[in-house]
Image 1 (cartoon, rainbow over the protein chains, first blue to last red):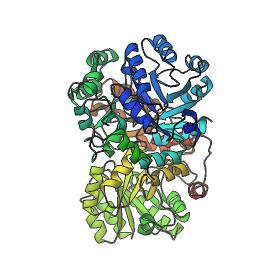
Image 2: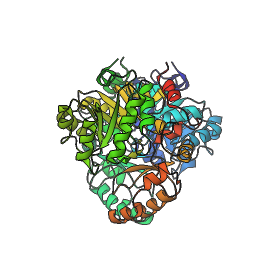
Image 3: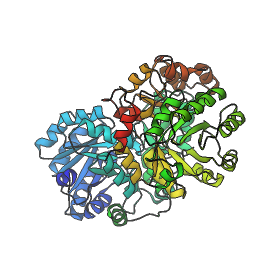
Image 4: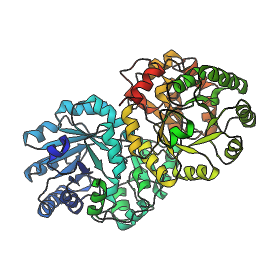
Length: 303
Length: 303
């Protein structure tokens, strides 16, 4: 028992990160059923799709679960109203300022955590009234902070800056890393990569197998002129790299990226032309096949 | 007692990283006298300067100390012979392949550790016969690996890859981080930044004060087309950033860098035009002034 397990009413202080194209109701409910906190990733869902996933998740578990909402979501008013109407009790916000929505969510009795990449943003989140912060380091997959601060440096800095409970994220894939971030002061962990590669994740099997065979250096933080994003090196990211090292502008990168690349890569399994978002912690998973959430949770929680 | 303290004959498994323009005989002997392992940084010394520092270090401590030698050192044959002739018992090698020199050093009874940025290089170092590896993550100051793997991901990956004792480096500045990397499997730590900013470091006072006031995001890994190097953001690094994002070539960056920039910044205290090498862990040192090595070692080792 600590502040994170109490806050969310969960057994283990392990949050499954909300991830585009990976974390629908199957993954979130499996994590919640195993005693962690499952999060539906709204970032890759239309509002009505999210509604369906919330209802299916509730049918699949009687345990607490939540929704991750990137604050740059295009129909943000609609999705917030929907989440409240559907009776969601826990919301994780990211990729934007928590000032506007935290109060609105809290007035409706919703517990709010916000993802930050620096102690500066952690203090802003505390001032906005969130219940917990997720301190996410440079090693995390997908969208990432501009500070490039690693989990090892970020977590204790955020713990020193706020009195809120801190959830560590980025680079956490096994029991050793959980013990490590506990030593840094975190009271919980948010794990993305490891859960993205389980059976219950909605990512394509080809994507999962590719990611389970990556080594150090096989992912890279790219697209820094748009939003820094950690990607697997492939034909698409090589094209981005070539453009970036030749000085491509924001507009040129936007054209190169186009639309729907993450879906194409993660969900549809186009390993060459897709945008393959995953964290550095893949280098620790090389001997593992595609596991179930139950197997992963057992490894993460055994003494 | 563990394999690292036994290997080097030291009390605490804390190594002071060899750093350009910071780690002369004063710093190394102070760390050794406090029960850690001090290293002279040969990278910024002419051979005869290193000889003088070895002799002064020996006069200042009866405890074990060592020398860090970047393997790209221009007069590498001369410096290796000098180190052997002066009876140095411990050498840390970095920035190059350990295949050529490890055997030569070991034949002379010298204990050898090698700095790596991936499990691939760790296995190479083990095959070359080194006694320990330093697994140094992305958050470290100065020269850095191309894989950009953070300490949190790198240390357990290296521990899984080799049977040698592993020393963790990068982002370690306080007791919390030491406990964290122990949980990851490290048997020792190499600390640079924290010691670079002590009284005994030969860095300029202006550099130390600047670094003790940095926040997350105030250092950045740059010069990736040459050798990736973590620098404080200043006028010089802004010029590098502008050139890099505009697609500057290796040759253009080499011209921009010129010669003697690290000395100008770290040693002479030119905070605008110097190359200011320091690690991300500075963000944890904001409330601290310039401490003595003894004060730092006390904080790092107290229960």
